Length: 80
Image (tube, rainbow, N blue to C red; front, side, top):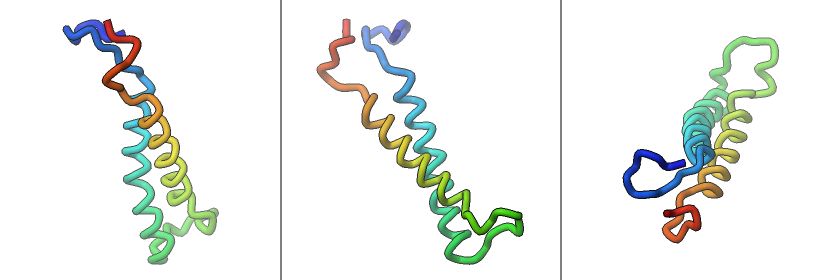
């Protein structure tokens, strides 16, 4: 898995997926909160559901879980 690193380490792709998902959630969550609580929502049909806030919360939760679950550990069994 970790070919080319020169150190014999392996990183799970899910760690990077978790980082990206967490980054998207960290961007969307405050913007959704600002739009909801500051009444700055776009005039769309379903704006009363506040989808930006809820997707930001969901992405932050999933991204945090995947980042914590698949983070590289110092004593990992997959090391060469």
